[in-house]
Length: 325
Image 1 (cartoon, one colour):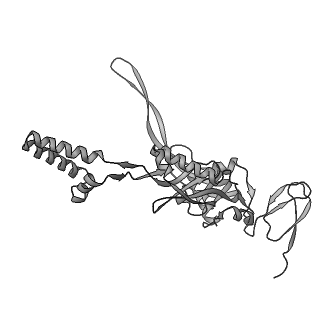
Image 2: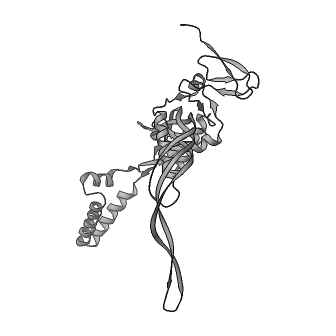
Image 3: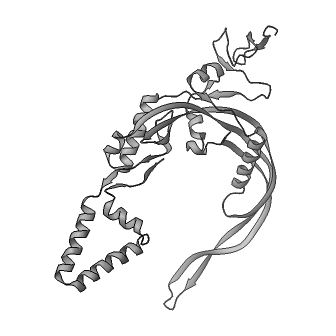
């Protein structure tokens, strides 16, 4: 293999020439110190938002959310932490303008006056005839969408986060040492189509009934931003539970954890005691009480030998799972 090539470019900040080696993603200007993100062949710069919480803080946030959702701190104590993985999920962010023409049919509102028998006037707005027209539009675009399937992580978009949080140039080697970097799956062309569709739906103003038009992106600035998310694994018994936590603010995004276990010793004892007491009053009262008990079971989940056995002999009851996020 040959030696890496050296490329010379001009700094856009101070116009001083400087060089960087092939494969480098970040190139600080030696003259003014500006840190530049070097884009690849596709011309799309890639950035990363650094994590602000560590694994211990993410674990504490997940346990706190589980305790708050279930209301029983004992559930959290029984969970065993198995491990964590920091995932950097890719998101597209496209900014610019959608320019073109747009035809829209809008509803109109007209004021209608009515007088009652006493001469009192009432004014109300009613729907008027539809109006249509074609106009030139220039719509600001700031669109963000996942570059891969992020549904299991519970993170839908980062438009606000990418606008207010500092972005660093992506250094794959350094970021890969901290966590797992997910590659984009969707293409830039798909993002452009989605951004134009969103702009078209926003065009025309209020009261649009139908619209059609032709828009094109201009002044486009497309970037790929990786966002940190902690993927935590807990266990209880032989079952594993996964919880995802936002790597910036510590918010629990998605996951399921077991809920509290309830001891049901008093339930079968109370049932048997009441049935025996009913039979001691009168056999007919006892049979009526037993019939009412069986009818209640049939109406609440069905009547079966298994459900009756669980009612009388199942002293430990699992109350399901707690859904987080």
